[in-house]
Length: 597
Ligand code: GDP
Ligand code: MG
Image 1: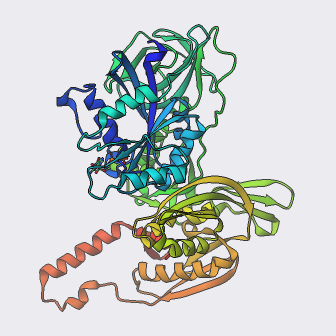
Image 2: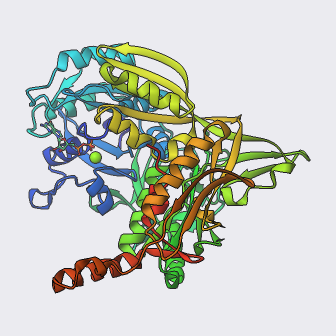
Image 3: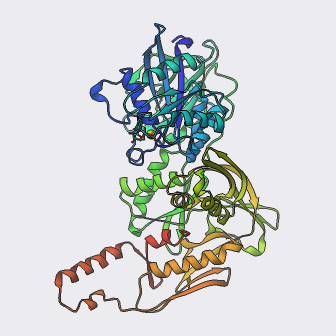
């Protein structure tokens, strides 16, 4: 295809501002999908994505658009994940296109994810077309939002396109804007092949499908290709484009976006951001800027039923084949038995994997406290990367401990600002910036990632009644007074409840945890002490008093059906219990005990 007749773009938006609906409209209006095959949110394929309304993996579609100038254009849309956990994947898919539609809900205005994503687009040198969506809503204020885009983001919004992705108003204008305002791709057909690996996924019939953007050269079916970072070599079995159905094509040239299959066994063998070239006469230098995505949040996953360990292993290995950013290694816990220590890109990633294990593989899981990677500098000059508080070296040999910090950007209506500042302050945040955009405040905080991984986002939502939006990026490691806190139930340490905590906050956290556990652990036939301790020093203590176990005793014999119900309930409750020495702890206690409120 003539480079001048190609436009490659992505859509950036805050969640729920209408990205998927707009993509569906563009596909529908250009007749790319026959009306009978159209289903809502055609680009959000996985069930979990649909249920949560998020797009996890990048997706792509090729649209043919006959423009007003009489030429037919090839429009390639790459749908990027909008969540911070997948920031690296977003940045790579941005590199694969020349422009972005910036979709902002005209009844809501700019949000934190709008900012994070549009800055990525600006970093990638994109031409940006602002699109004001949901103008059909009575609450829409396109003029105000246009001004806000200019004030907050600093781009010209005077020619923003006003649309309703729902009713279809303005969609033809969006298509014209793509053709007239976004640049055509550049590239050299005669140069050695250079294609960017944008994304990949596993298909049970086709094996690994790789999404590519050709920068220079031409790739053809049957070519022998080489991945420049991993070194893997493969013959191309199939080459094609998504319309969004897979459609085979003989070759892909510069500026084009499509897919290939090449008997690649696992998604793990494909690295987002890698450069694909020919095995002979290929490019000398790979594309710049490659960095494999690294897990930042770790937790233990254990089967509630210890007999399910092998099932868990199989399930985790299957998921890992298709997700190179998910790490796992076997772990044994005195309290929980055999399980896995797993690493994730962030909390959403963790939740998605846990959900899939529970739902698709039917395994009940105990998830231990999420932890970040600490840098433990030893007295002898060596450094230990601590992924699990249970592995903490002897404090006598430790010189200092450093923790990862983030830069968090929060947008919030000003009536909730006080609560947000307090929350950040409580989480050891250092304020970096505070500015206003109309009646919304934008606060920037330097926060320890550790204080954010567990329930920061939930707390933020609740103190602002859902009106705040939040985004973050890693900024590096810094020393602080960190200690490991243990919980002892009936004098036995429960390793799954060990956490790293700042020394000044240990007592408050310890107190909160033992109080919660006292509520969450059912009474036993004997008295149970519950303690929080640092090293050998107890910093908080509660005692759960003894009780008769027979819950039907108080039914006075009378109502048999009520008695049955109680017994069933007790039995069902048991299934979710784990035995710790002589004490049974319900599975839910592990997560609840760690929540801070
Ligand atoms: P995404 O998270 O950015 O992909 O947003 P979606 O496309 O999933 O849209 C979020 C919600 O907004 C859905 O309930 C849509 O039906 C709704 N929505 C999208 N566009 C419009 C619009 O133009 N007008 C109205 N009233 N609702 C819309
Ligand atoms: Mg969506």
